[in-house]
Image: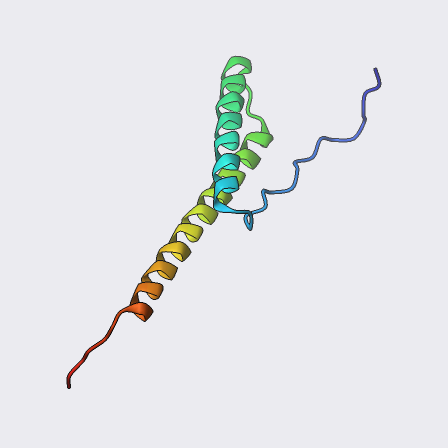
Length: 90
């Protein structure tokens, strides 16, 4: 088995333009990875820089999910506002 002499590199951050359902699935995966990374760090008494990358990805996904939820809520509110029958007497 060959061993690479290149340093391992973090993969690209998650695509935060994905649908909300995918973002939630990715968030669940990243949370599992974080639990595993924390367990390994405790067992080996060492801190891995990769754990920081996992945390960064979790933060990006959470922010994207929050933003998507706000956009959906704003869209729903705007749609309701536009479709209401306004009978204003001034």
